[in-house]
Image (cartoon, rainbow, N blue to C red; front, side):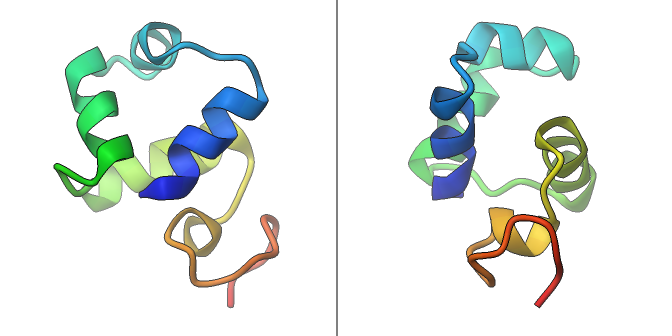
Length: 69
């Protein structure tokens, strides 16, 4: 999930802060960002809600952050 890191860095949020805000583990955030681990649907929805973007945008299915494909 390459766009997760892009969104996080763009908004000046650390992995630790994101993990704390979403009640997740920082190590999981790191693994999602590197592609070492795939986010389940619950995590995808949490990230989309947190960054106010669509799940399709997070997954790279669209370049429009606000609408589904």
